[in-house]
Amino acid sequence: MRKSDLTPQTHERAPKRVFREGKLWYYNTREGRRGPFDSEIELRKDLRSYIGTMAFLEDNAAELPEDLDCNDVTLVHMDTPRF
Image 1 (cartoon, rainbow, N blue to C red):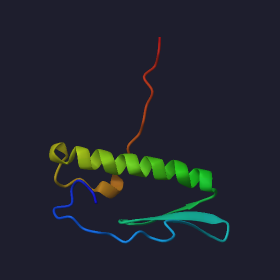
Image 2: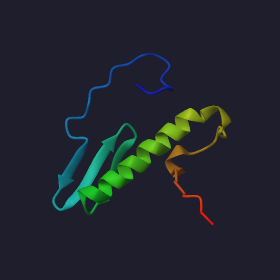
Image 3: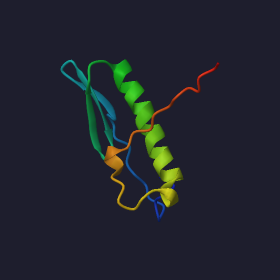
């Protein structure tokens, strides 16, 4: 359940959230299939970024513009330079 869900719901877990077709890797989300990725390592990096982005969008929903297309948003982590 996501914080933004209005009512408690149970969602069946996808038996194969992460999977491979031929030599390419993919993963499934509520929003659809993501990929292809050349390796599982590349997929896992994208998946971490995707989870962080979705958490950010949920945590900041009240401050975000109403017409924001969430499919066009990617959270980017930046290190603060140390001088």
